[in-house]
Image (cartoon, rainbow, N blue to C red; front, side):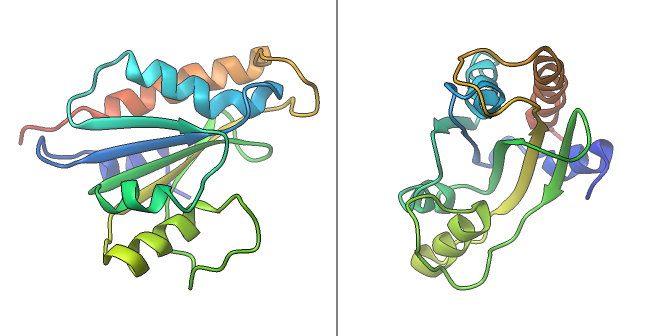
Length: 163
């Protein structure tokens, strides 16, 4: 686990680095929609050199987008863990194996390496959520506060560092 300050420094980048922020979750299941909500908010920041994508779940097809990037930030709701969020470095998860339609972020990284020879830096950002079992398109108030904190932290971290 990284402190937010340490993780933020690890995300700092030069203007020529290609960054992908890949958010996922189901907006129809309360706090599971944190990822797509953060994607919408980050797009409004118009961060130069940053591509923001949103999906219901990670798929094999994401490996080519990951392979085109120098840095990938995977963003999902976290059902447990610290509040408001946790950020940690992420590496490939062994040999890619397929037993479901949805993939883990480490598996997507492993596919990018296996298929394209890519080795992007990666961070997993888990934004703490609390309510996942109801069908509703609104975040809980506590998740909304955590989303606000994650948005401010990540937007600041993704601004290119000219030095």
